[in-house]
Each structure stands twice: as structure tokens, then as C-alpha cells.
Image (cartoon, rainbow, N blue to C red; front, side, top):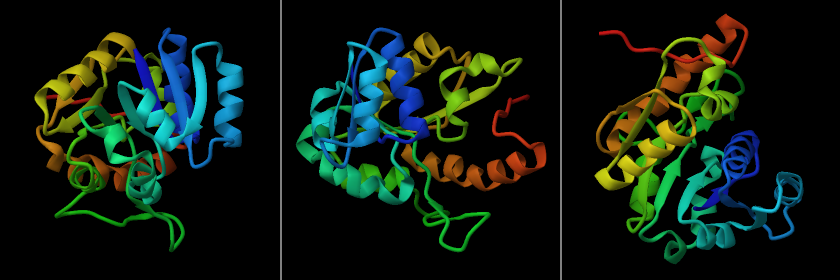
Length: 215
């Protein structure tokens, strides 16, 4: 399968590297075709890896991953182009973190809206599925780095798209517990969890943790 990964940071590199390692064709997108991080990643990741602009990565991928910083996500997806997003699954991993007043960050959208919803409204032809935004990058792609059963969450408006993302998470990334929270409005909850996640990171002294669910 062909995947387009938008974003060259820690999250984008982790997801793109994992997918390429599983044998998928992966194109990493950045603002410019000569993006240094994307080109360097593609050179190191092997024959199935390539790089390009956001638009080129979006056109290439059958499944797309938004791994850009939350504050830049809408602009990046606009650069990707609606015609390149239409009809495709768009896994949104971004969070609306606002660092303008330093640490700890706040959220630039919350309560009655979410970044996931904004992305879906701006790109009505895409099938947005919010996922993996509650976990550090290395745990996203290697859940076995933590002991026991812990959870990843998905939400989105298209049941088929969610089902395909669940297949990728469980069948390829190794997640044993995937919890479907419903439609894309549930992104308000998973994004708001980042406020607690950051405090937990400080209290635990590590970003390598996750939550389990007991009922």
C-alpha cells in the first residue's frame, strides 16, 4: 500500500519509518520539494521511501497521515490540496498545542470544537480519523515497548475509514486494544487529554507511558 506522511518531525519520521519497514511505499511530504529532513529520511529509509511536497505526498498516498504541528496542520493540508485528499483516509495525529505563553502549553481550540473537526470541515471530501495523538512517537509504532495492555483511541465520521485504521493499528502496528470513541467530535476529548499527558510526563520523568482502561 502507498502511504503519504505529511510532516518531517519526530512523529512523521516514526510513522513513516515503521510503514516503510513493513514493506509499504511511503512518501514523506514537507513544505518544499527539497525539504532537507524529508529528503534525508528518504535516503536513509530504503528503496520504498521517497520525499516531496505536501501535495506530492498527498497525491501519492492511498492512506494519508497528518503528522504536522497542530498550529500548521490546516495550512499544510491546504497546500496538500483538496483534490489530493478527496476520498482518502486521513489519519490525524496532530494536537492543538499552544506554546505562545511557554510551558505548560494550552490548547488553541477546545471544549466545543477540536483540531480534528476543523480538519474535517476544511476537507469534507477526506475521511478524517483521529488516532495516535495521545501517545509519544516511539510508543505509537511500538506499543510493545510498554508492558501489559494499554489503549489507543480512534474517532471519525466514516465507519469504513475507522475500520481500516483499526486494521492498520492492530494488524501492522501491534496495538492490542483499540477503542472506538465514535464520531470526530470525540477528538475534543483525546486532544484535551494532552493537558494531562504533559503533566504526567513531568511527574513520571518520561514520555514513554500510556493509559490502560479498566471497567
